[in-house]
Length: 110
Length: 114
Image (cartoon, rainbow over all chains, first blue to last red; front, top):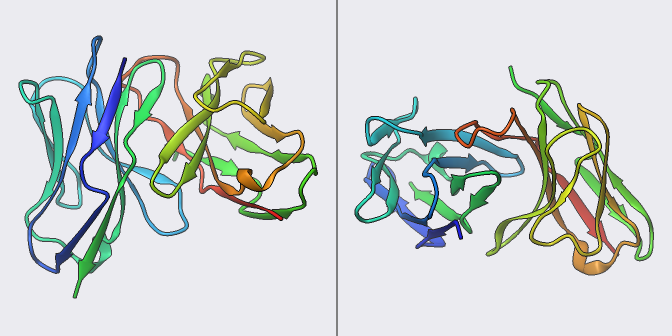
């Protein structure tokens, strides 16, 4: 069965510090992986996705994620966070359905 | 730009009431989904639809039903609302099944059942 596990439910980090949000997946079929971000009182927005090709994918606001097949991971990273990055982040795997992790709440501390 | 619109952002209903949550997408997407979001539980799939008049149960369909009479509209129905259905409900859509297609979300509907 396909599933996605986010290893941290809450991640506090100081402004301008680096951050990593961890995601592991299991799949017996195909691997399409996504990161979504949810700002307070809003729906989810696509941050980035891996379909094939280069294992490092980037978003327009400085986040990146690396697909690691041997470790079945798709961790999200940013070298320097801003206050505006405070949000809930969801890792997801896709097949006929989407399989979401339970989310990681990122809080950036001034 | 992709647009998924949920008609009601905030609703308060009484126990036993019938509740309709409406969702409309303007991208001509075949697939539509209803999720429920609760703290610590992430997103759980209630129902999804591959196409008009088609529906499939997700992980937590009990207490819910859906309707998809037109391609652009997917309705979630709570036949008799209960307090444990107080939650945030998210509608989403996606183009025809290709696993790499992005799923697009509406803004969410906050439902409180009292």
